[in-house]
Image (tube, rainbow, N blue to C red; front, side, top):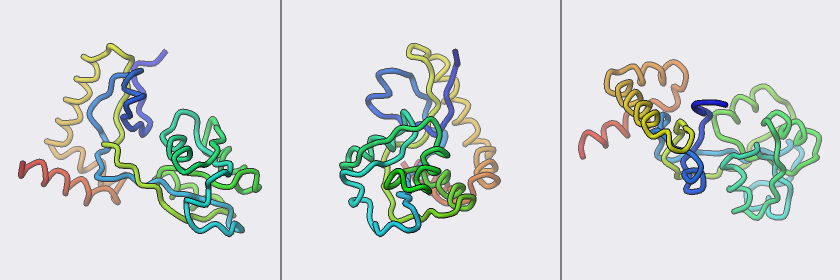
Length: 177
C-alpha cells in the first residue's frame, strides 16, 4: 500500500530480509534510547527492567532492547499509549528514541528518564518493498546529493540542532578516508 517508510527505522539483519533500505538519512555514531519510568519509581538503571513489563511501539528496535535486558515487551500502536500506561503505573518502563523521548518528557507529567540504551546501528534509513532496489538506490543518491550540496546540514540545523556536531564529525571522517 506504500512505496516507502520513513520513520526512524534502523537497519537490522531481520528487517533486511523483509525490505530494501536506502543509506541512512540520519547517520549516527551511536543512538540513544531513553529508559523512562513513572516519577514515583525507585528504579535507577535499565537492568532493573528485568522481568518487568516495558512499553514499546510495535515493530521497533526498542522491543529488541527490552528482550536483551530481560524485560517483557508490552506492544503499543503508538508511544502515547505506552507513556500514558506508564503514568498510571500499568507498566514498569518505556524505552524510546532520544528525540521522541525529549518531546514527550517536555509535554507529559509524571515521568522521568533514568538511563540510556545505546544503539550502534548505522542510523535511520528509508525502507522500500523487497525488490525495489532501484528506488532504494535513487533515494540513497538523493541523500548523498543533499549532504554534498549543504542542504542536509541546513535541515539538521533547523530541525535537529543537537545532531549537527555529530554529522560534521562523520563528514570530516569520510573526507579523510
